[in-house]
Length: 108
Image (cartoon, rainbow, N blue to C red; front, side):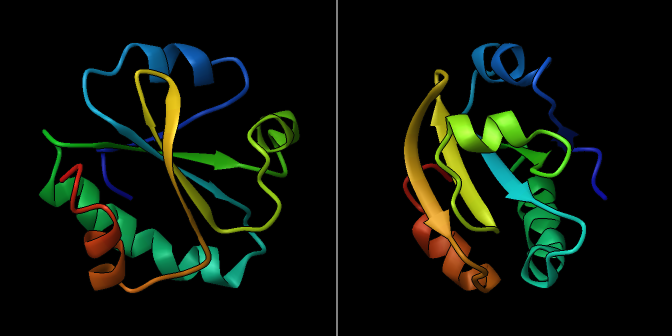
């Protein structure tokens, strides 16, 4: 996993999002989720290729269920883009790298 990806918890979520000068793409995932495992390397590549444009973080929904509930995550993988701590975009389900890049073009 890339050094450009941060693992968030209920204790660190608000601070990490609030302190970021760039949009934060948060991947809500679980260890047992096959589509989540499929997109992990894609998000890793995006984090490595665009470190100055976006931060990528992960929230394990099994370990941080309150965050998933708070942010209305009903299925995983769900990727939520936050700017200044506010949700600005939501992507649900697995996508190809090209699909993510197209959806995220406005922030990359």
